[in-house]
Image 1 (cartoon, rainbow, N blue to C red):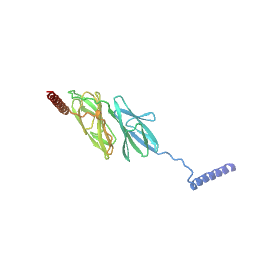
Image 2 (cartoon, rainbow, N blue to C red; image 1 turned 45 degrees about the vertical axis):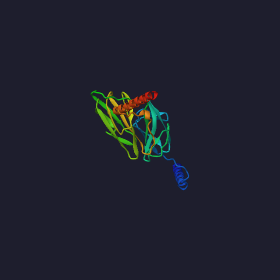
Image 3 (cartoon, rainbow, N blue to C red; image 1 turned 135 degrees about the vertical axis):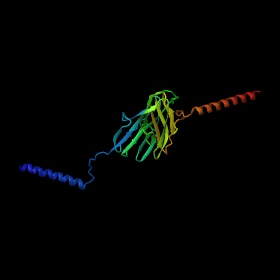
Image 4 (tube, rainbow, N blue to C red; image 1 turned 90 degrees about the vertical axis):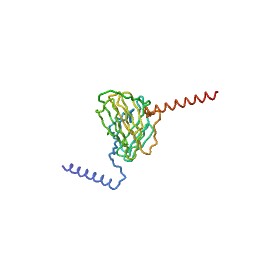
Length: 253
């Protein structure tokens, strides 16, 4: 009985000594739980995002230790090319064309998005088709759309639909990307209006970048000429060609 009591006293003395030692000597390291930062991955038309060899699902959030450097890899799918990264936090938005993206996490929350472009724009012609079609408006870092992001099943095939952008504070609109059965196309017009033809499903996404960003789109991926513009350009080319021919013929006389 006395032995058990002596042991308890001895243990209490040891515990008290340890606490006093830590109190008077703060240089002794203490174990603290690592702070977790959340990274939201946006859905990106035209490619995927991975980190550490693991594919990251768009629309999901992933947790990493604060101070950790994570290498995000953008991989374009067939028919697309990588344009740039955009990541946003409480500190603001940043654009990078370096792939993979080495992001050191210092904020509690991040949004990461990879932007892709089709290597060839699809041609969406008018149609007299009838019936309903689904339009899936995807979210994007830096802004919103009208209608708001969501899945809509009440659009009519063969009808012209319009969508507009609302850039967030500190951001500017860069381009629309539309993917459907005929293919994918992009446009830099702030209001997107096109005939819902030839597909029962459309995925549409508006892309934004920080106002200070100098990222631009390669000219070949943009197809914004209306039919009226095309006719005017063709007419001008014909006139120039005819004038050149007439001038050459006159010079030979």
